Image (cartoon, rainbow, N blue to C red; front, top):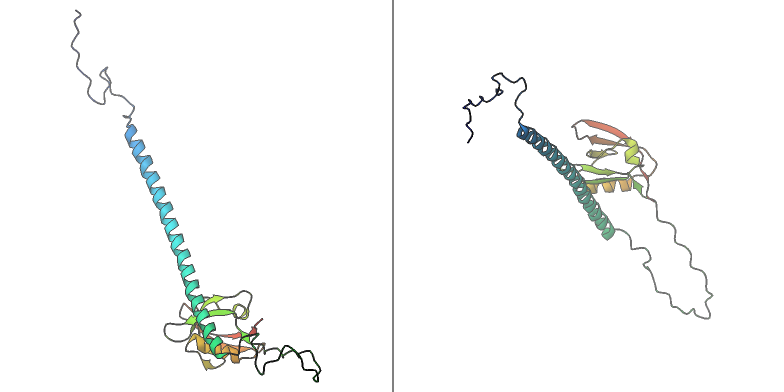
Length: 202
């Protein structure tokens, strides 16, 4: 059996020859931990960005849906008090067979309905008073005048606007092509008077 000489074990951080090593001790687990932290941070930033963008998108869709439902409601109200539906007959009914003594004539075309004015904007009732713009059609009279989403229309040609229906009535009474002054409260809180030329509904 071979005898082994007793040798002292080197101290941690020292080489077996008694000298100290110039290289730092390598710790492979620290590099992996750093990599995991970086991957987790990047993943978190990505998820946060997706959530913020989807929230903005949902907010925009929600505002559009709310605005469109208000517009549809106003159109329904206007339809109930407006003229008869197109194609509906008014007056005495005409028989399908002409009488022999009365000559048949072609029906005379009815005169076209008067053209209505439009600003080409979508509005809803503002919180206090006025009509808040939720959509501006491009191109259109409202866009050309400088109306933007979030503006609140307070007056239309000197007439106070308390709600969206007041604005609809005022614009309907306006003549297309004639300049009108509107008072606007911007989203920032500033007031401005704009000149708008209502267009023709087509």
